[in-house]
View (cartoon, rainbow, N blue to C red):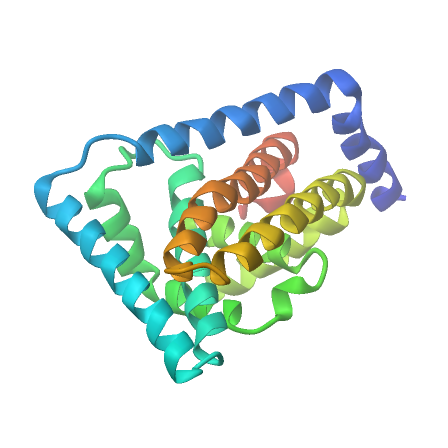
Length: 234
């Protein structure tokens, strides 16, 4: 009975007016990320960016010439989920100023999750529906903890409960993510077939990954705000 009542409550988020508001907030969050990426950077950052671009162009052509095609998906997935982790940190609700010190602090504290995110991303497991959503919720719950093993277990439990008890709206968001993913994959296939393909793929990631992360993080914020008593330990 509790499950059915929760489904009815979460389905209210799919009412046109509520859903429109959710999508507008998601679009704004995505645009804010684009704006942040487009800000002028320090000279050191510009040189680092130029070095990364040059490295990816060279690596793309080395892979093609040496037929190391097994390396390509590893590099692509490593880039995608490394960026994914950083964007979850960037888009989570926090009173902290999200400057370089913020990212350094959280990557240092949750270095295990950073490595785990990339490692899992190297496998095809996130192609299973809802797993990426559950994992994103897990990260968000974890970032609000001290990072102990017990905290991780509690975060995973909360992530599962959040999806299970809000399945109707989670299903709708997962469907949107799937549609975005179809377009995303077409661009990736085009990119890796081009000269300097890994560099183009990185640009595609910078365009599409923020959309997916914004969808999940805004859904998390909305559901947590509506049901805090289910997730907060007393």
